Length: 82
Image (cartoon, rainbow, N blue to C red):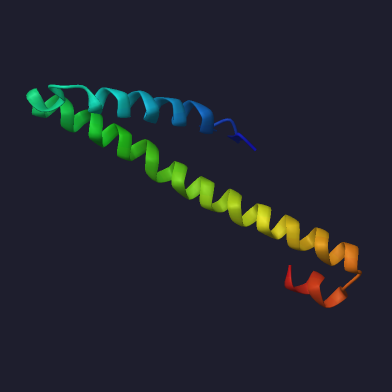
């Protein structure tokens, strides 16, 4: 699930965050405060939804695992919990 509806390209966001992190680590980054703030805002705008996506994906994987375990055990009550 690397793409969500074609609108949320996870890998591209990660790559852009990495590139922005590299830019932010360069000497003199804060020499132009206006530009630096734009870069920080862009990074934050990318990171927030990415974190939410990753949390959702983790929960989805947990549910999938619980479903598989319930299926293996044939536990009807566990299916209701999933």
